Image 1 (tube, one colour):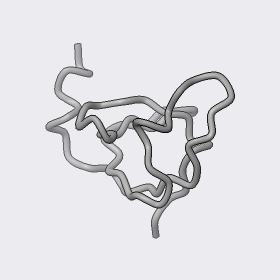
Image 2 (spheres, one colour; image 1 turned 30 degrees about the horizontal axis):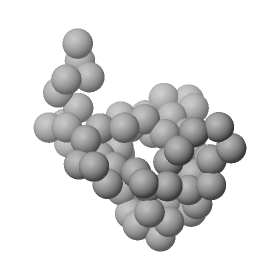
Image 3 (spheres, helix red, strand yellow; image 1 turned 120 degrees about the vertical axis):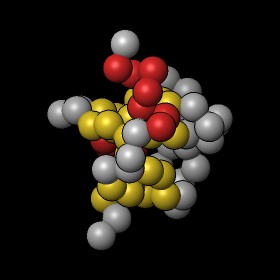
Image 4 (cartoon, helix red, strand yellow; image 1 turned 90 degrees about the horizontal axis):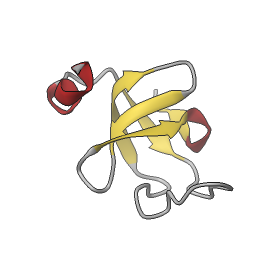
Length: 68
């Protein structure tokens, strides 16, 4: 149940959305290309961020680039 506290967790890093063109899922209403998001958790394939709905969402790393 650790995922219930991710919204309050400190930010790990920032990432920027580079595209919202998904082949299989609808993400264009949850991500905005060019917008920066705070990463709350990360796995090998996914970033868990607070998306445009102000909730935690898990998205493939292909949609983002890291902000330096």
